[in-house]
Length: 489
Image (cartoon, rainbow, N blue to C red; front, top):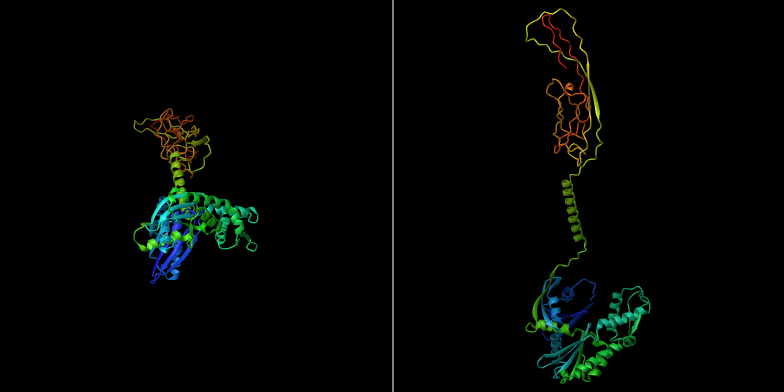
């Protein structure tokens, strides 16, 4: 037992035939039709691969194993589209020209064997093809195509007529078209049928009379085109006209075309699946008439699915965070709120005077005198805030551009003095600054921090600090032989 699969895919529906031949030569054919929805997002190769999946499932249910797959194509462009991978599993197929598939099926059944030449009229979904065929030599000549008749246009005529009645108002046009296509096929053998759209309890009825009324202009035009082709120089030796394709099932088309041709009519069984059956037979034969190709192998991915959107969102968020971090570091934006402007502070310290005794010289006798009482000295230090510096925001807080290790050097006062012991500690803002001792006698009462020269770094004065309390030094008793020398102030 040999099982092969054949498909034909033009620009309309996909016809599939599962062909099984037993040991005695009997042939069993199982046909299926896939309605093409232009909005399904599939390519021609994807739709054909879907048909292959459907028929392989049918074969497994019957216990058959498909050995070969043949696909009939109408144009070279269709062949390239079919062989350009597409979605679905990757499979090896045999590409067969549609005219060769039809000719092989007609010759293998013996329906045209008695004729020297016939005219084949293929009434398809997107147009009508005509060509001459010589059964003895399998020679195909004078191919012509006409857009005078098309199954898709016929479906639209029926759908517009049905929707115009108002009973299918609000229904999708694609749903109504699919129902009208099914009704058109049923009316080829019935007088009436029902459209199962909308309320199933009240279906819309379509009759053959209404179908003939709608299709009469199209059928008459197709008959004239066929008549001109048969009476022309191309088909001068034609002895019969063969009608294939889905529209060949409609009586009005069949009758008008045969009358216009004036030749004997050959109407094969299942005219809509002639090309698919011929492709299956050529693929099963395995020699000549077909080109090996591969179909499928490309993953089906919807760019608007959840996974790609999630990945894109994560990448976008990471990029935005990186840009923000880099921009913040380059601009030097502070991460803490701006501090209040500094205010001037005044510190008052009371210290006791000190007495210095010089014992390096000779001893001199002096009369007794009462010891001098130490007098307290009051020193007032006023510190003004430094002028604000543009572009502040250093480590010491907002508005302070000084580094944490900066120190303040105070100007020397008039008169002798000791080296200054006052040093600013590193800024620990926003933590409290510790109290630092210094010698107040070194700071003149009217001294202020000097203004830094141009180009230098501005130094902001520290906050107001209170020096620790100092204990007055007890007076020293001077011997009688030495006269005390007061400390210069």
